[in-house]
Picture (spheres, rainbow over the protein chains, first blue to last red):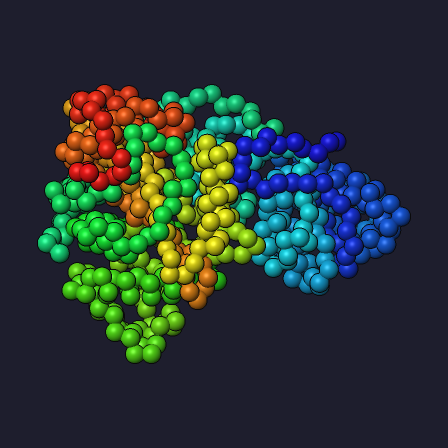
Length: 207
Length: 347
């Protein structure tokens, strides 16, 4: 499984890297779906340091809400001090917030998987006041987008086509290449406002 | 000041209009016959008497009607005014800047009496009188930014400065050219400008940010931006786009002069003294095409700008579908004569 290469057109979209082991007093890994592979690669890169690192590592994992990918068994075999699987991000979030609230100086955070998982987890990390440079991200898996309807403000998860129908207000929306880290979402704008009913066929753009 | 405040609307029956005086002082944004993005900033120093540059914050004949419209927008959608918690001090900075400026520039309408932190503000046109304690939000009916921007024309955003970047973290945005404060709040400088075409590649935002990070207190700057709006609708928000978007399909040669408006933003930037934030007032001026063409130089020039503009810009500004119709309508007022450099109608 290779990491994702993005087009360069979206300037408000975060830049994702490749997870690198870093010296830290503790390590928090949050991943979904194929992001499990990025976590495994991270510890492979740590080489001889891996066992000592894993002894201070907390893994929080959720299956991909976009395509169902579940590789928790790979993560379990790493042997981290704590390795937890939640059914969804929203189920995992209270645990994540508690871990962040309890964090001491020197915590290293690794986020891997879909843009939605990375965005939502990063929002919690920022709210907890962790410094920017303590967080690394790596994109793996589905490119499905989380999109906020700019009209009704409802968020539609796992959008794969453009245009799509807002799951809240039912308007036909196109996905604008504009991303908010605060909302962890792209912006959806009504596509047929000027010509009601003239909606181009939905194309799968975010697989 | 030689004028009265108009009783007019920016919605439904759209009775907005510009007096002859307002037309002559309209901030026409094109200083030449073509247009492309540039940083185009200049010091915001007092300009010609009677012009929109005469004072720090221009108060014109549309003042009361614009404030009524803002109140209506906020009633429908309170998310148009937001301030992240750490931006309150910047809000007080802005309140002080506006109150001091208006009391100085328009003493017959506004008064500010300060006794230590005990302030007394009088806004005669809006019939507001408020005694409050500066820096104590419990003494005002709204937060400081919301309080003063409910009494001041134009949209406002407040930018915090940290990590060599500017972060849009508060704003009062009800007269916007199709951008959402609710979506953009919290973004860095390049992030909130992400949807703008062509300008990133030209390095416009890199240069603008570098310039703004060094902005000094007491040395504000200004620039123009512009777009096109059908009907004098101040609130062209993305939130309400399904409501106003369809009007773009209703233009004809017969109604274009009355319904098509040039929308100009006079943007100023101010370093704030306590918070070190930057205040960004975005003042919107509207003019009907039929009002604008009463100034022959502007008529010729606008025709040439619209006719020759890069299609990506016309699309971003939302008038690509009407561009040819607008150019055709304007061509009636362009005899091909040369235009003089600069904005002023008579120079």
